Image (cartoon, rainbow, N blue to C red):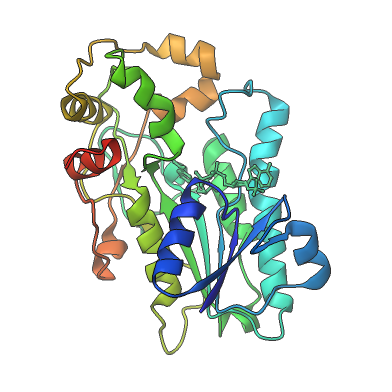
Length: 303
Ligand code: NDP
């Protein structure tokens, strides 16, 4: 099949592209920059969706961009880069003479309220309560297809936890400090740390693209894109130190993170949610890295 991937040149998109091509599928990336095997968002708007059997959106301004101060313009970019691209792709799918069989959007677990005790599955009710949950609400709403199109195109939302992998995301920013023995817990360390290995997220997206039902469900099918191991930030920190054989005795206090990142953004690191991938497991998805030890060993290159 051919899969069109918005934001496919990014961290998750590169892994997904590798996996799809390895399985013999073809990939077209939608990007702000033209290039081989790519179309731009403007071309998508003017020429419509290229023929494809699957569509995915992974586009979005990086939430942890270390080069940007936390201010209104950054927040606007976080919203518009996700919502506008998702809307554009959904509209192109709806206008296509032969819409794809599957349409997958990756959002985040920030829709679930941070708590040390509450456990969330895909069936948990939630209403927006802060900036990031509002973002998820508007982002997922932007993906909705008109009813007649949704009868033939399966809509899937994967709510991802922190994506762990060697080539990008949180690990790329954290690893240098941990290698130097300067790693430590963030805040109290007791906060849940929902995570998934990038290879498993790519696998789950591929699984969502592929598994066809005779009558696609009209409302989007939600999968929690997190590993089944429920870990805290303390457990993550200690395991990473253990795998690297480095001490992890430099905790970073909340006020330092707040000052560096802005308190609204720092909350993503200093608080967390216990997220259960109930439907993901029920759908028969097999994780390559279900636990922190196997995931971190692969990432730092120790087998
Ligand atoms: P990246 O930061 O790698 O960005 C993905 C792509 O988005 C980029 O390659 C870029 O493509 C495009 N992009 C960046 N800024 C903008 C912008 N301002 N306007 C339009 N497009 C833009 O993301 P990841 O691969 O890490 O994540 C993929 C998706 O998953 C994102 O939507 C992210 O929010 C979500 N997610 C990621 C998590 C993580 O830990 N990484 C956790 C939870 C959710 P180009 O330059 O080619 O246009």
